[in-house]
Length: 396
Image 1 (tube, rainbow, N blue to C red):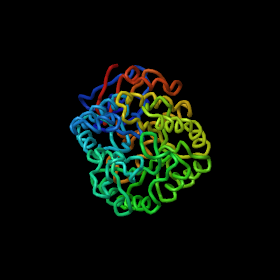
Image 2 (cartoon, rainbow, N blue to C red):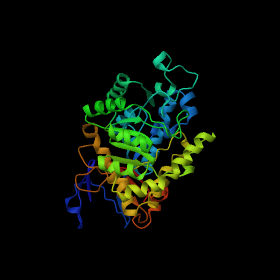
Image 3 (cartoon, rainbow, N blue to C red):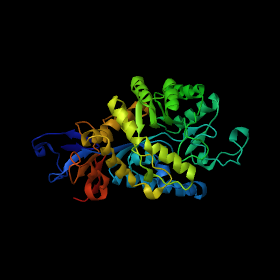
Image 4 (spheres, rainbow, N blue to C red):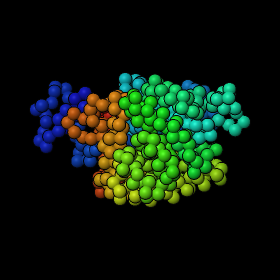
């Protein structure tokens, strides 16, 4: 394989040395497995890198510094492209793309948009909502979340995220484990508000992704034009079929209870309920041919960020190694490409090893097609990582 600049120039079964330009660096893979860079369809780089106490108390520069450091760690785990589902990562993406910082390619959603009392309302109960004159919560000040109620405010919130560099829009349409005020059963945002967000995103050539777990919430989201369902662990089988019939994506995470730790009983119980749905929703999605993406959604526990690799290997509990690797690379990339012209990497293909594709590659010690668990330990099993045609790790 010949790489020139940021792309794969040629692939051949015979040596390409005669076609190599003078001064080209030769890398002998020594019989290792070569694969595309990994992708993650649901990260929170800012949330991965900072705790809730950090969000509430740390200086803004520290929050961004932690996020920049986590971006490099994520790249060194072999994740060369990610879709960020909440957080002010567009400026970091810009600096990574310029080569100033090291990290994965980022598809930012910017602030995740929530109704008052919704999943991304991180204000305290004693604080007056901004609609009634109160100050926005700290997470709004740092553009991690945005609370907006009513069609005009939702339109403004969506357009604000697009203005600041969002590739796609993230709405929270139901309860979650990390949030304080909303049972999992809640329906969040009216159909009119959701349709307004979908229209505003579509006017910019992109789509809305929605945090939602339940059948009722997923059905409402699909009916209003949402194109990517984030989570969906509490759906019934009929609703899984609705996703397929709508031509939408299911972006689901192979959650286990110990992926997240909640100090209070209510949130721990919500987390347990979500995790109990993991195996069933994967089985139905596979049975009914749903377009399925893989992600992690690790949040507010910086010490657990490296579980990203463990969760990637865990996908092998639900799919064959080949199916899992396809989802972890070109499958997720197909979802990313729904951003259309908001996809700043659209000039070449992501998630594949092919002539003309972006040169994002990993050499693996071991064969993940027979033992997917090798990807759980990238520090040991990924001796070489290339992103954008540049070597970012070489320990062969």
